[in-house]
Image (cartoon, rainbow, N blue to C red; front, side, top):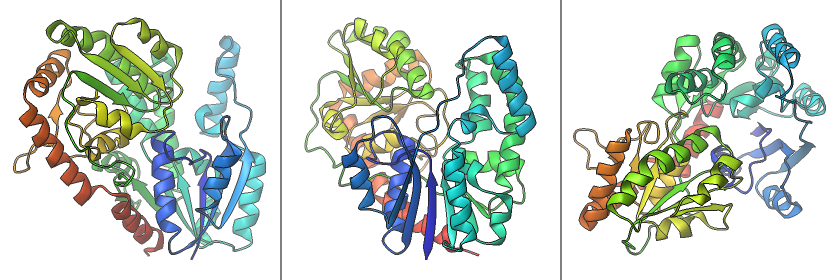
Length: 405
């Protein structure tokens, strides 16, 4: 079968962020049995070596330049213009930011020429390239990753919105937008039951399938020993709003309380593109901001505990699964552990849950003081990942959805 994959995010190497990881690994699985044409955009920082590396996984790589970014700054007049555009077109500025007319024309011609059997949009931001009439010619699938309406609503609820007034105004428009774009697709894929319920409410007649994220167990092998000590770690792209909020919350509200009890505690923030608010945290004793690193798993193996203090952001977190696969005990929030059965009745404990600073202090103290508990969580979580959350399993499900009736 011929599959056209649309991803305005360049998905290689699969270490740049959660979107890239999911897109690349599903693409890699589909390429085993099908002819893959990937149409994507070259972002700043993407090298020729990375482009050539990606070519090894697809039959046809079609590359476009990233469009000039629409400015989100400016006076009240500019803001009114952007809002009016959203109101009239029904498409948020974040989606229009990635829209390339040149790429659209190429996709239109490819579909019109009957060159594919299935089109997948990797992340909902790519829905803009799908015309409603495509459904009559090919199967169209959107791999949502996370609900934009649900995310905005959650950010307002938790108080971490960058611009609450704007988001309150935009919220009903995002609801309308999500309902509208979903109707263009034969099939919708999400990562958790929570996202399925969210989208099913807006689109009762849509076919929605849950396919969780996975881990490459070869890239994230189990560590050979527990290093002990008092070393905490967070992993993730550090230009992502949800990650920025999580790290700032933990560094300012949790870490000082931990360091009062365990003065040698350090906190490694490992991930690409740290923004200024994250770089500022280097002034706090014990915090190490690494930026992008060659091997995430090396840092994980050296850590005592991985913390996932997310307060927003929907879907199963790759960072959580990767830490579990690497054998690192996890302390995470409800958002950080979303979609994972870690402390349910009838299952062995696989992580400790915390949402308030006090709960983090209690959970982390337990793990610092009890090596046996660290080992128990590590063993149980690694086993869960091996049996339920590999990219091989996710890929099989994705292939079935692509070709189901």
